Length: 403
Image (tube, rainbow, N blue to C red; front, side, top):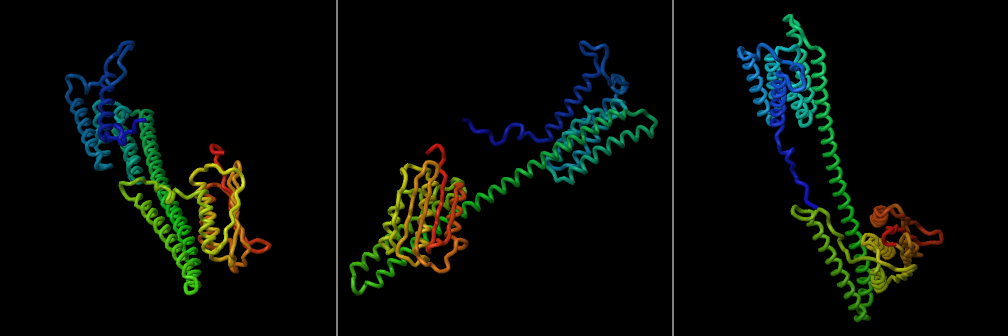
């Protein structure tokens, strides 16, 4: 599909060009109305003495009105009220050439367009001043004719005044819509940044907290047997090295993802560790068991491919729950149950440790797990068990397309 042009032709044309075209179109129709067209019994209007071939005053006024309007159009991209004043003067001059009792709509089209552009692109106060100037000009034109003892076209002037107000209202609505769109865009950008920060914070916490727990267990085991069983101490230190290298690799991937937010890179970062999923839970259990905390994994249901976000969230939930067991439970074992159901993936991590001070309402780990489940519209619970220990459970809905 071809890309939509960033700057369409209509948006590239300056407002002054539109106002100039509006004046020229109104002037052309005004001249056309002086003649009887096919199908008409007589000309519509404006066959006046001032525009007769023998009178130069009318043509001079019409030329002056055109010059003032075009000058205002040329200045419209720089200023607002001065160009409008020139166009209002041009409409009066053009109307004087017609010897009519009110400023016609055709001579006010450029002013209406100017009111729209001012209201759409300038502050609200400027728009109010602009429409007030237009209405005051219309009223002043009628007042001068009344004081001079000439007839006036009240109905025509009311219609023209109504078009001026409508032009301002449409421009003001456009201005409000743009402001709302800008605020919505800014809010969306802020929310996206916040969501990405939370995503990185969850990944960093889960990655580092689990590795530090395993390193602490292995280092403690090595310290206890380094004098009596050097081989076991060497094996434990090897596990410390492997865990540290793996975490260092994950941190490098995280830094790479963060750099994608720099100018010239993609705006949406890929998963920080796309390889992690359900298939890695057994390896997680083996590594934790080797560190001294036995993790028994029970699989239920038929294991099948799942969307990456579900698989990764399931792995991180199990990882964080096991990390909490290592750090806080005060027990040597825990049980992990992964139930692959038709419509959801259910996860449960149980331990029987005393774990004094454990709570379901504190800690970034539990908060991160709850956020992960919430993003997938699932259900999460973490609370002490009545019989002792702690229970973490999550239910992640599986999209219909992969059931």
